Length: 246
Length: 98
Image 1 (cartoon, rainbow over the protein chains, first blue to last red):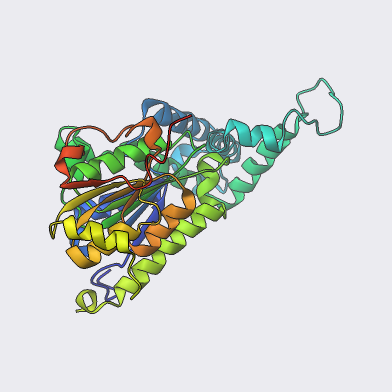
Image 2: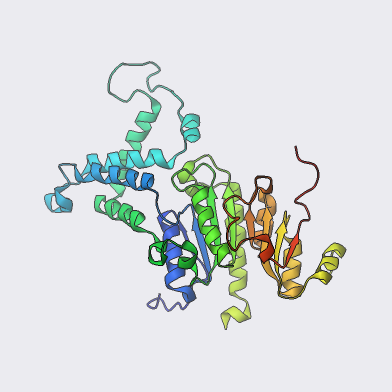
C-alpha cells in the first residue's frame, strides 16, 4: 500500500478465502479501508470444511511425484494428486441441483460400458476439470491456500467472540452469500453479519438466489451484478465527496 | 424537491441521530430521507431483490431477511428491537398471511 502511495482503499473486495482476507484487513488495519465487501465467506471453517481440505492435501502429498514439495527440483509435478484434489474440491463447490441439471445420469457413449473408464458425463467432466487445473495451479500453493482457510479464525483471539474480534473494524460492510453454496453457506455469512450488528457497524447483507453452489461467486448472476454494481457506484460517488477526499 | 408527504410526516416524529429499524423498508426511501434530514442510523429489512439493490444504490444499509421466518440468526444480544429508537413497519405486514 505504501509502495503504491495509497493511504486508504475505497473498497477491498474478496470472495471465499479472499472474503476472509477482507475481514482480517478490516480488523487489523481499520483506518486503511472504507468499504469491506465479503463474498461467500465464513468466520471460520467447520470441521467438515477442514476435512475436505485435508483429503485434497492428502491426495497431493501422497502422490509419489510430490517429493516433499520439491517436485520442481525433480522436473515433475504431482499431477495425479493435484487432479484428485481439484476433482474433490469441484464437487463441493457445485450444488447437488447444479450437477443434476448439468449432467443428470447422462452417459458419455449413450450406453453403459461396464468398465472403469469414464462412463457418466459427470465423470469425464471432473476428469477434464482436474487435468485443466494441473496446468494452471501449483500444488504447493494449493496446500498453503487450504491451510490458510483452515487456520482463519479471527475470534480465536477474543474468546470465540466474533463480535469482539470485529469491534476494531471501521469499514462499512457488504456481505453476500449464495443460496446453494453449502461449503460457505448463507448461515455462515449471517454469523458475520450478526457480529457486525452486535457492534452497530454499518452493514448490508444480501443473499443471492443461485444454483451454482460456491462457484456462484464467479458467475454473472443478474442480482449479484446489480447489488455489487450499485454498491461500487456508491463507493465511487462517496470517494469523491469532499469530507472523504480531505 | 418533490418530497413524499408520508416521509415528511414520519420525519417530524423522529429525533435527530436516532437509530431506526425499518421492517419491510422497500426501496429505502424513508431511511435515506431520514439519514439526510435527521442524521439517523439504522437498518432496513427487505426481501425483494430489486428493492434491495435500490436500497444499496441509495446508500441505505439493508439486510435481506424474510420477516415471515423471523429474524433467523440475527435475533440475539444487542440486535433487539428495543435497542432501536424507532421501528417503522411500512410494508412488512401488508395483509393477512397465507
